[in-house]
Image (cartoon, rainbow, N blue to C red):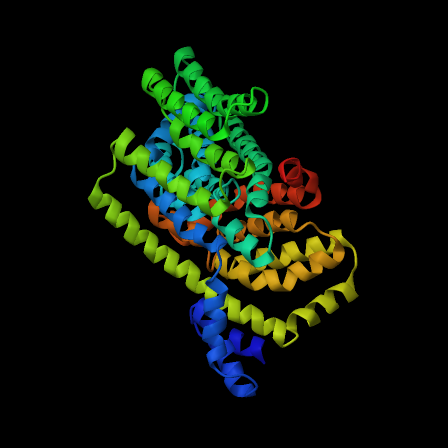
Length: 464
């Protein structure tokens, strides 16, 4: 009965959060077994969670980076690094998204922020608008895979999994996805005879490589100083940050300091300096220092607007989580999750078959539900089956999030699809067709990530 009421409300065009809370309330009133106040109680307790405090701060950090002119710096860095390749701006699009993913945590922010710059630049250089939209849409899915990631925070809270482990698990799959997308760009460039978009100049390339080495080498040097030379951790990190700012001023780097956001975040969590929630606050402070004091591209009027946008987005996300909490609790209380689990385990006890079926289900659900809502509905149903089949929940979390990110690219509810259609001023139909070729690298990545869990779990097991 609960499922029927929910589907009826959804088919009537009611927003998913209201449909989940409303169907739970209607079922309670109809059954008469529980007081209606249970709905409010379960919704409040569903968001009364310390890990969920990370959500508004990660949203704020992404908005601050987006409004502080950081996107232009990331674009220029990527242009210097790979713009000289054949199909240059396509590669720039992918590399820029890899970098921006380490700050925004959402696919929508990537598509709306960096995507606006990338699509305009590509069309100005003679690329078809469809190709520009396709590569931008595909690369936007990297946002929630490379840490930090809002869907990982929601999944970690729902499945009782370490958010830090989920963040580490997303690094290598994110690199794999970026590599496959760049191979796809190279294929189109070879087939269409595209050349480079900027001249190959050694000084420009060397400077971009130097920035990359600084980002990669800085945490290694700090780790060696702390572990091998027994330097005090906090003092060493502070001194390292001071040196980093001095080097940025001396060499006039494009994007070293913004790229350091995920490095500081992951480093702080793995060394125990702060929790994921405290890391989200640290990311906000880092963004404010860069925007207000270092680059001076933020002012108080912009800051107030960013805060209001953050409040609006946070309210939407947490309302979905609250509504899904009562709905998930009702699914468990009415035996729906147990019945689904028994049916699946009666059909197959092979983990690889379940993962195949789960992928198909999540790809389908992702076309109709926003990722936060889909995670909160699917976790109570699928996680118990994973536990019985011995599937690692960190691995399954990455599989789930990637499936739902691919769903963002498709009608009827694909948010990235609609954002890019508006940015590029294309019809939804033409945007959908433009995205279709990019499903091959995305589905290829999904296949590898699903059936080669060592790729996902190597870093989490090394640090946790």
